[in-house]
Length: 358
Image (cartoon, rainbow, N blue to C red; front, side):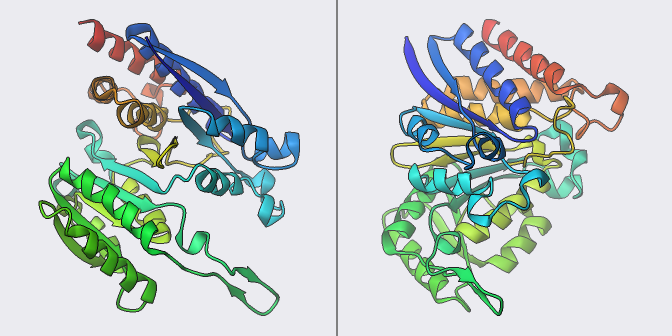
């Protein structure tokens, strides 16, 4: 029997509720497969600030470094808006990414046919959209030094070195090889020297992946093109700031941020999380959509634990449940028909069980 240690970091807002859904699907997977999960829950974000005074303790970080993978719920909320910037809940994410060396963030944007009308775009534009955005996660302007501000000005530094760009480029080319063989490198090389450097390095790495079609696109045009014609994209690779923005744009064209998972991958460690935030207005109301959390577990099984069959079965369970017209309030127009977080999670798990057992 394969055994894996998973650290869960429920965090704040709806984080504990959707983490509960993630743990439920892990338990179902364990029941139906030759897998065993040791699941350990730790504090992170605002709740860690309340308990320990800091958003991420060294003890929690040590547990994450010792785990086979990490699942994160969500962090932050208005309660901690006035906390010193260096100690805000979101600083826990930056420290986790840097400490675990999670340099590549994979953000899929896939259209589920039952929800195609939930998108703000016309169905003929988004039908069959399947984008994978690869965001460089541990470099760029979010981490560059020097940085700071005083009463008259503020400054940040955007810097990348060769090895940082080469490794994210290789991840992206290899993903493209296993999809449709198309990669778009997004940057702003017409005005930013760092982007010209990025473009040059990616094209240099392309020499090792001649079977992949590589093209370039300025970030402002990419944002427009994702809205205008998302089907043109397969894999997109871009730097930290641009990836943060473009992945949210691609997420919203699917109809709901509550639908989409993400993976942050390094050479030794991995972390999986829904792309939605802590949604404090929904916290404790049993209304949050658990799909992004459940699909984040599916990504964990497929990427880190190499259990692609289990991963695809989870995706099918989600799709089949949606096909039957089930969902939470964010995707069901008739509120009276909408399911709670717990009930929707149970429906998906029951569907997964039937897929495996039949």
